[in-house]
Picture (cartoon, rainbow, N blue to C red):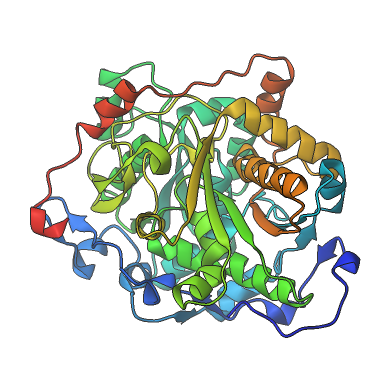
Amino acid sequence: MANSNSTGKSKSNIPYKIYLPEEEIPKAWYNVRADMKTDHRPILNPATMKPAAAEELTPVFCEKLVGQELNDKDRYIEIPDAVREIYKMYRPSPLMRAYRLEKALGTPARIYYKFEGGNTSGSHKLNSAVAQAYYAKEQGLKGVVTETGAGQWGTALAMACAYFGLDCKVFMVKVSAEQKPFRRAVMETFGASVTPSPSDTTQVGRKILAGTPDTGGSLGCAISEAVETAVTSEGYRYVLGSVLNQVLLHQSVVGLEAAAALALYDEYPDLVIGCAGGGSNLGGLMAPFMADKLAGRRAPHFIAVEPASCPSLTRGKFAYDFCDTGMITPLAKMYTLGATFIPSANHAGGLRFHGMSPILSQLYHDGYLDEARAVAQNTVFDAATFFAKTEGTLPAPESSHAIRAAIDEAVKCRESGEAKTILFGLTGTGYFDLRAYMSYNDGSMNDTIPSDADLAQGLSQLPAVPEGLL
């Protein structure tokens, strides 16, 4: 679906920025589950250890979103007109040709990146936030509750809720709230309430603080607090910015646009690279190209890049686990470090989740997601600053994981003489991450990588699941 007819246009004359016309904003999201050779294992109700039915999920999630979460049949799901109207505020996003980066590296590779930072949230997260807020409003809810790591998702959801007149409650990972106070300011400007997590406002938060009073928190902690608040607040539902099937579905607009823009110049990627925390960015970017691979057509080599401090794909276990530290959410079959694992306080807050999307986990397990790499903070910021000096955009720490791998692959092309086409996702800008850049610039940035013993502790507490469901 991503291949194109030849245009005869010279690849040396491709513009720096490729914009699709507004009418080319996708009219439907692509559901990769419909094409997967092996669907991921069902999510389980932890009380019964049986596959969770829709009626068990609707007290937590919006009804239409539950339908999308469980949908493994429909390849395309229509995007509501109200959602597309808001998408038009910032989409189609540009596909950029990194000519200056190519020149600086002396590589024959052609490097493209899909830039998702051109909205106030500064990231791709708004694509799903708008959809989830729309369905909450359509259901007649008062508001939604969520968690956020680095703050991109919280900011995006605050914006989307403001557009639809919904209340928005955000639990922000404590260390990220301390590192990025201006993210909190943006959320509050759009009307959201923000609580650093873990907090003393929930039972699970108080329990976590009692055991580890000095913790900087994690996305797993914040998820627990958000879910508890949502299910105990009338007229509210819980929404999540990554990991879930519905989120990867909404983010497919990124990959669909990228494929269409490349097709204008008869280009097709040899490599697709994305940072990977919970999976929303990479899952969205690679969606149409993965469709090619699943259909047996020409397809790229897919690379997931994660932080060495939270290496779920590269060092985790493919197993059923809770999606939250408080162990109150359904169980998902995914690559995980254990729900109790809390990573070091690195600056890539959006990549500090203990598990990986069930969809990406299954694709990786089956060999369709080709490769996963874990990279340390300092080498990530080496790539980030090099990119900023050549391409003129200060990237988010999360995005810079993909930049690191793209640079490494371009150098390989220089050494081999291969003129590969590389596509990576620039998920957002780093202008709220200046403390991280200050730490890197003054040499105080540390690389904290968990030991095997650290990981064993979290993995030792995986829930017992009946053998027939594994």
